[in-house]
Amino acid sequence: MKLVQEVKQVIAQVLDEKEALGGLANVVWVAAGGSNGGNYPAQYFMEHEATALTSHAYTSNEFVRITPKFVGKNTLAVVVSMRGTAETIEAARVAKQLGAATIAVYVDESELTEVCDYKIRYDSLAVDESDMSRTNSAVVLALALELVHQTEGYEHYDDAMGCFDIIDPIYRKAVAYCTPLAREWAELNADKPTINVMGSGPAFGAAYVFSICNVQEMLQIDSVTTNCCEFFHGPFEVLDKRTSVFLLVSVGRSRANDERAISFLDTYGGRRVYLLDAKEIGLNDLPDTVSEYFNHLIFSPILNNVYMRALSAVTHKDYMTRRYMWKVQY
Image 1 (cartoon, rainbow, N blue to C red):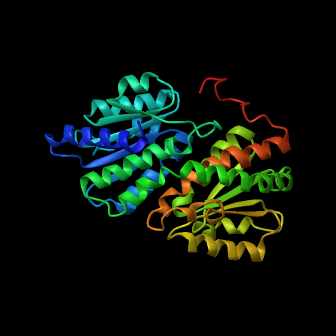
Image 2: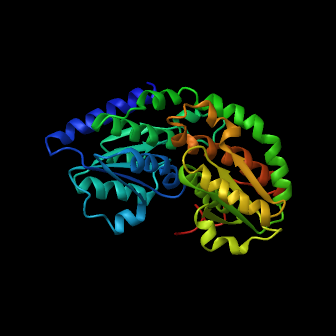
């Protein structure tokens, strides 16, 4: 079944279930690590387009230990984990115990899929053969679009849902375009102890995942994520000609914030300032009405599968090797 059809059915079932209880009032997006960052496009869409539902995103353990009081019978909890992270499973249990409807978004069956009421499988963006229109971020964005459309109507719904048919072809072209550029970037930054990653608005989630999952976790290189707007309120003091900066330039209303940062970086930064522009990797092929909400779906797999791998090759660091993860108690 196509993603858009599957999502439509699940959301219709959730809304029908909650109708007798007073209707759906809020949605929470819960996950840990890269899955948490991958929830960003859903939350971003909801907070900018939804008027009937409130939406919040939480990392799993914070949701478990500091559960928001509003979570209850009028809540939908979308809980994401590739293989069933323990704290994410516990978050699903907490949500369900409080009366929330629960959707598991997953790759491998686990206790998470046993706990949750509904489940939708996704394709891992780290696998080259995966369909990039069905990654975790794609699934949660489709859920958010469907939620808003079924509860209050979304005028650009058809434009948005049509994008899922062309995300994967856009990604394939972007891989070919970025591969030689990524090699040059990696060679230039192989010796840097810190890589600063910047983004704003719809691209900030992809910047965050690139920092914590690709650079820090996979390559054990220090990395800092900075919002392009917040750059001017402290972080720009570390900038000099030697500083490594990787900036995601989004399409959409926040692009002006990215361009403001670029202007400063052009003046005071050096040759290790690198720009990855959404316009150059295919986001302009999507309708202007909705392209803003799809930045993450192209940026994130390109960063993981092209730029991270290029840096891994140049630094001779096996990106499947960890120091602590899966090895020690934590």
